[in-house]
Length: 421
Ligand SMILES: *Cc1c(COP(=O)(O)O)cnc(C)c1O
Image (cartoon, rainbow, N blue to C red):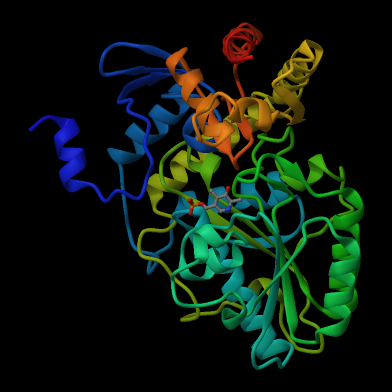
């Protein structure tokens, strides 16, 4: 059987895959099995902040793999302690503690469990409610998928979000948030992406984030940030929310990570703030005590070694600053085109959403969503990007791309847009 036949026969068809078979990668480039070269500005959906096969990542994997790959969390893991320190001191920069898991959905599950525990044991709420927002994406597990406000993700699975304790509110609607928190004493947490990725690079407004924090403090509600996609330099800051409000004004109670943290090696984590519990002894960061949560794989020596190499390289090579420079260059060139097929360019660091003039693309796309159609054309032209929602093409290139690579991406992108207009 060919690989194509095996894929048809043996792989569950839950993905609408492009018919491209990548077999090798280096930096910002990938080659498929026919030897065709691609400029990879998808990066496995924001998973490869250093590009493919970065020497620091390869070295961390090979060295740790030949030393100790895995031990259980029944024992103490030095690399886990080291990575936790970096996350607290260099990424969040607010006192707190970390838990390691394997993916973004799992990291969010941890925060959701923390919020429910907090609701039941600290706030005395029997059925805690958690607020999430329109067009959010929090992952595919039973908790995270109902937190996700997208019916295509949670529909036909036998629950409603309400039954599982979620309230979905309009993103960036300050009045709706204020009203809901004031009228609903069972709300124990807000979970929000500072920059929504899957919906097309849409940032929270500073006003919304400030209001959310104020309401959370007033009502003993936890402010939880899903930073699975927007952190580690993607938006030009180690912590994504600082791309919205710089400095230390925002002090989240919990933060979740995955994607870039492991350069493609499965790793997720969440951080919990070191803060006293309201009206109780103890601290929020110690609420998940023995028996309350766990994982078999999470935080293995190998995963944490890769995480350390990735995060330290981003820090050591000043890739936040570089991402801001190259990202601003890309946005200014693309806006300068004033292209009839481009409605808007949304850019924070190298987190870039190109919103298409959907009606114009739809006229030529044979019924396919504009974003998927254009991403396919880009692939044919030798460039990987990621559709986000129906109308946005997203660029998530390595944070260390050169200006020449960015310019090459711009040339390919413009030539495809020109061809379609
Ligand atoms: C990708 C993503 C997730 C889910 O991560 P998985 O590793 O696929 O479980 C959650 N939240 C956000 C914001 C994401 O972008």
